[in-house]
Amino acid sequence: MKSTRSGGGGLTPIISEGYPFIGGCFVLTLLFGWSFHPLAAVVPFILMLYFCYFFRNPRRHIEQDPSVVLSPADGTVTDIVPLETDEDGFLQEPCNKVIIFMSVFNVHVNRSPIDGEIKLQKYYCGRFRPAYKDTVGFENEHHLLGIENSRMRITVKQIAGILARRIVSYVTLDDKLKQGELYGMIKFGSCLEVVMPKDVAVTVEKGQKVMGGKTIIGRIKD
Image 1 (spheres, rainbow, N blue to C red):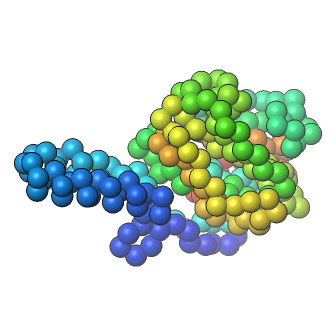
Image 2 (cartoon, rainbow, N blue to C red):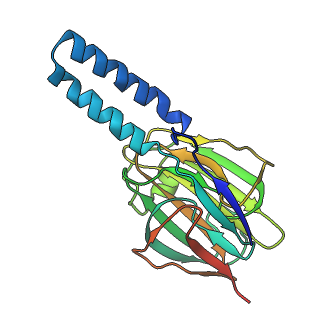
């Protein structure tokens, strides 16, 4: 196994997408406090602190292992669904879908579950239903990646929720990803779906808390 470090660094482990929100609240804090009353600055100041928390990008040591699938996100496993074939057509075989819900308090950066090359990429601009609903993977805004290496194929789908209004992606078709590497994020509450072939044993349970780049959610069967 190889160990790599991924995530924020220095004194500001905050992802760049958070700077406009944090900066805007900082300006409002100064403006309200100076122009009106110090108490008027409390709300934008609290929002600024929350955005610093939400857009955090903590440094993590990733133990890379080609025989496992790592969680792409922090959150809670809400369901594990056996499928006869991949609903998005990337895996033409029986597979399992692991659904991970991210609350507004979870780290929201997303990481590649495996080493591999992006062979499929799709973006769908849809609705914004609650991320725990059964059909959000088809109805809501979502971004799908199909990742392939010499040992397996998987898909990972970012799905926007009722508060989320933008899926951020740093990658494109044919890019190569390292296991645990950041590839995007979803703003303000959402879920991810990981689809793995049946010969990858699911190693998590419904209701389990997982950590992106750290928790093993699947392992190739011997």
